[in-house]
Length: 242
Length: 316
Image (cartoon, rainbow over all chains, first blue to last red; front, side):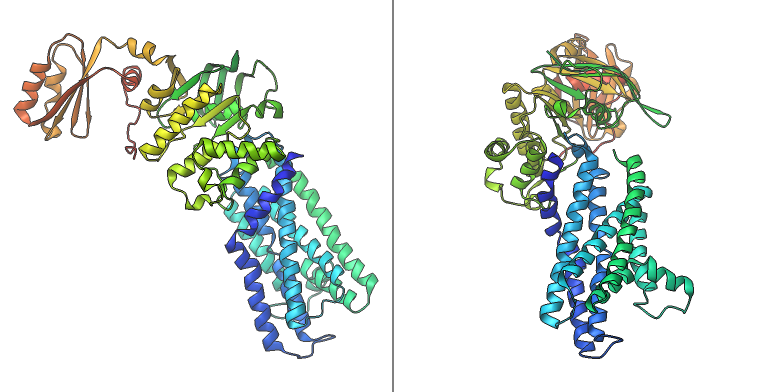
């Protein structure tokens, strides 16, 4: 498994990509800071409004973590580095998997930093830390796998990137984070059973409120979506991998 | 021992034939210079040889082995220096080499030693901890080469490794290639700069339009056109030179214009230098004059009727 040897270097490359760091860490920190100051101790539906908003915000940024994975997979195996990497004695599918693993870990680390920052600086109540980390992990995995599905299913990478952005912004929009969604059963159903951001938030919120079974069901649904998307990735990736 | 052998290789992209029944053998210890203009099919040929792209027809043998030759054991014996700079900009020079060394299965002290060796070989030991972003074009090219050397390949394929670099770095690379050959590495070196091939190759293969048009040592190839000589005349204004009159002179075979220089290929012993000069002087001033022995460029010109670097920018 010499492909796994590369994970250290992929991780180093990701951590030194300052633009990504700015987009996935600095911007959320700035937004969290602004929202925490503005919202103060204003009450929300069942917890402080600050807790709701900040947790949703951190989860929302996890939707975009997959962009890192898709950029590295595309760059290394389909673009500038492709000939050199394809000439190496390694399995390119396993190498892509290693990039995905590194991308997920990178996203989890950024998520952990954000949880730490919001907890210790702004006293945001995440409930059970370990559970929140598990949900962050599921969100990171989903985002990376889904972005790879976009990369492999669309020939033009620029279009794949745009689709991944639409996916992130669209889900945030449907979750009602920008403005309230119309009272429509389809949107309700989507947010309750499919939308990763509402499922993730609901799972953390339920665990925080002591509703363990409900929290497990929400994360289970999220996990189910990951399984489905992974099957799609397997089927599509098999055709596209060199 | 034959390191690589290609027989009847055909590669098509849609309806275009990029490799047209190529036969090529590379023997242990030689530097084969693969020479041809841009678009000749050189890169496609080496990608096929390295197993990076599938070929449509033909057979490839590597290290005396036929059939499915692109398994890891064979790939471990090969190294590719890509035409594009494929070093990771977020990693230091040393980390770049460690990445490739790791993929080639090197570990621990051995890996450390090989990485240091490769850095020293390309003269980048003092820059080991620097990011390639801070490197000049030449240094970047050298790092690009080092990435293919940590595992000490038996067979090294170098795809235009000197494109766009200064003469000093180019000489450094050419010297390194010779050193590698002396250490026993077999090298396939592609370029469209004939002077590089002339300097390092033990055998030259000339490609054009997907076909190998000739092969042999530099001496063998130029011997065929030894009966020709090249007269180069620098003039003030080439537009006024009466080319048709020059072409009618006895012994004149071809005339080419290159900037302000008129290149006249003429039969040896035709003795028409005086006549050529008097015709040229009638229309424009002569700045300089020299004669040259035929080189690989002339071989290519004789075989294809065009120059190796037609329509390209001159190198730095």
